[in-house]
Image (cartoon, rainbow, N blue to C red; front, side, top):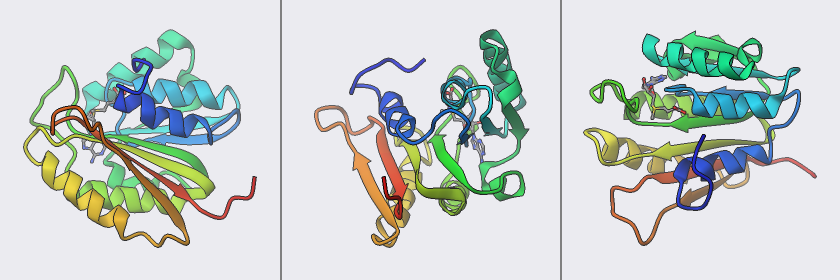
Length: 193
Ligand SMILES: C[S@@+](CC[C@H](N)C(=O)[O-])C[C@H]1O[C@@H](n2cnc3c(N)ncnc32)[C@H](O)[C@@H]1O
């Protein structure tokens, strides 16, 4: 579980999603990793909801499966060994929430990381799949090789989204090192509460 509080980028990313993903809803974890974000989404959707969890590494999906089984949530999650850039092959709209926690697998091979081209493609696909009012949260790191390029490409792409259709936020830790992660949150407009 992510440490609670504004010092945690993952906590912030999850917090924005918890406001739009509820019981019976549909969520996507675009980078399953060790399964903590998948577990979080699975807890929100409840037994009638559905979560799709993507990762390219078998070990990540094994770790995620184990964590879900420990919590009795395995039934509501579809684990997919596939790149998130192929998301549209497996998921049809509408979805309520999508999380990307980029970079490398903690405790795994730090040489296997998400990368700018596929991440940007996957975020675009996720935005197409979102229902009006749905949100995408992205935790992006710059400290590893390729991380800065991924961050800059994401910043460029999300800044250029049409403001009539998407609300886009970026959260930075102003009093931490330049290597601290950033959180980008995108909401699809058109939702009337
Ligand atoms: C920081 S970890 C994710 C942490 C995870 N969400 C958790 O709660 O433990 C990043 C993950 O992204 C995965 N990844 C890298 N490129 C990917 C891609 N194209 N599609 C899906 N997953 C990818 C890596 O294998 C790694 O497991």
